[in-house]
Amino acid sequence: MTNGVEQFEGAQGNNDYSSDIQAVIDIDGVVDFLAPASLLIKRKPNTYDLKWFGGSFEEMPKTWMDASPAFWANEKSPPIMFINSGYPRFHAGQSEMLEGLNRWGVYNEVHVVDVKVHPFWLFDPWFSPTVEYITDFLRKTFSK
Image 1 (cartoon, helix red, strand yellow):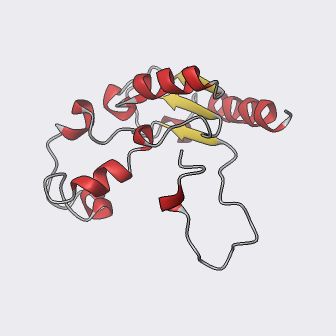
Image 2 (tube, rainbow, N blue to C red; image 1 turned 90 degrees about the horizontal axis):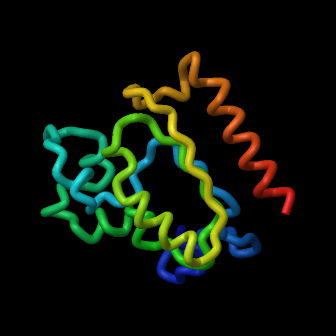
């Protein structure tokens, strides 16, 4: 979501290429780690999210915010498709982010696979529909 946000540009030897993202496919991914549905989860000390952030929200609040795409969405954000499971906590901040994307005219889609299996996309009967959602979204996005 940070297309055009200067603080996320770097000089890592690829300056001849744009760092702008062209499309996002979010499969059950949180977009606001500061939303109550995400922040209030009781986490064990060594969970992967705490390792990834380098600590708890209390220890690393700026990192938690920086990692939240909802805070960075803007009119230059790429088209995005959400594929959601039946676990609301994985959609924390999504409705607010969609509000902004719609206001800015950023193309988006939301599909719900109403099952309480977080990695549903890896299993039948959800694998094939997930592939179809992704294929259709990418065709629409890159045929413009």
